[in-house]
Length: 122
Image: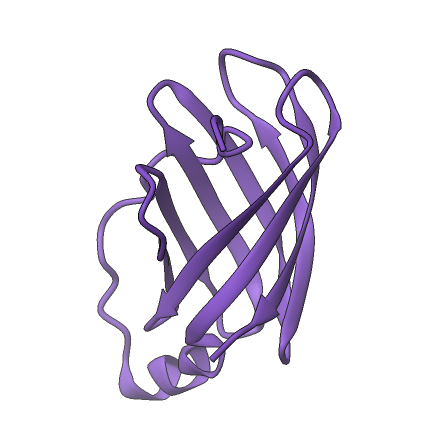
C-alpha cells in the first residue's frame, strides 16, 4: 500500500464536546474496516485500512505510516483526510449503523479519485 489514495492531511484541533453532543457522536465510535477503491487516475487500485473512531474523531489503526484525521458528526457525516508523505486525499461521506460509504479525491501530486466503503468491526 503505497499512497493511501492520498488520503491525508491532519485535521487538527481537538473539539471539546458537550456531554449531550458527545453521546450522539459516540454511536459511531469503534473499529472500522475501510475499503478504498480508485476509479480514476494512476493510484493503486484498492486499499483496506483499519480506522478507529473515538469521541467522533477518526484515526488510523494500523501499523503502516499513514495519517488519518477526520471527524464523524452526530448524524454520521464524515469529513477526513489521509496522507502519507506528500500524498494526500480528502474524504467525505456518511456512516449509517454498521456501514458507510463516500468518495475521495487527491490533493496535490497525483490526480486520482474514487469511492470508499466502511464496515464496523467492533
